[in-house]
Length: 289
Image (cartoon, rainbow, N blue to C red; front, side, top):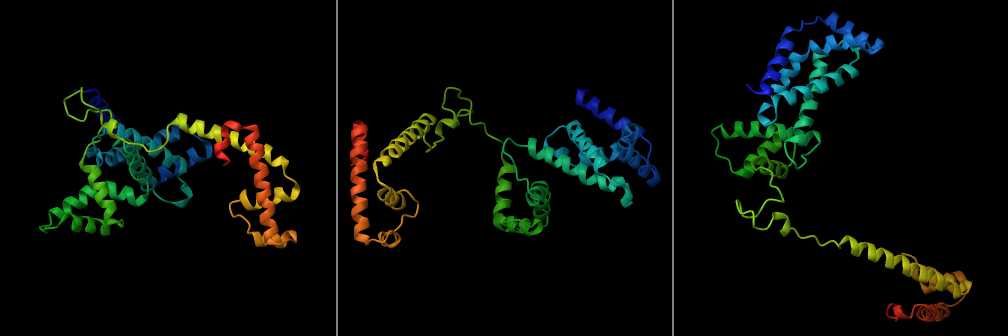
């Protein structure tokens, strides 16, 4: 007998020994926990509902995860329910706790079923946990359905797009593949799958080098701008150093001169900047020609 089997038997045995609670008992224990933080009340309340945890966990035992782990996650959901339960609403604790137990177990399955993270929206969760059941139901109905028809019917039943059904179906049908695994099965000398992944992004050292160069050129430009007078500086900034450069005409109207005069001042200012930059950084002259 394995350790997990022993643990499972102990959990079930402890749950079966726990007494059933009346509505009044539930309310009293829940109030003692909520108002007084009575640990014994919490223990009695949760122990009495471990049968519920085991029952819910058993519904998800076909996802390839340990039933003991599912029960433990369900217990976490049970404790969360106890922390949030409001006795004054006159709702049975078991009814309220079922939602939290199921949600915690489903989140655990989604986190651990695959190394590729599944959808986390309510629609995606419904698709993940109902796809197999609906697919088996439709396949056993005697109808001859193509894959696209099958996906459309499942999508209509759950309220998602057929493309989402097709994607989830593909993911559930195949196991995860390691990028470090050899391309040729059984041949450890062959290249890994990751060797064939191509990334067009620049290398980290190239990014750092480019950032350094950009900052250096900005410093050169800031220093060179100091040779311009106020009007030249304004024209260059508004024409060349803004995302939406001002037009010659609009600048002329603002400065009270003709647009041709603005062009002349801009041209002269650019020549002054180029001369200063080439003088101070002759090895970078190609950037300014």
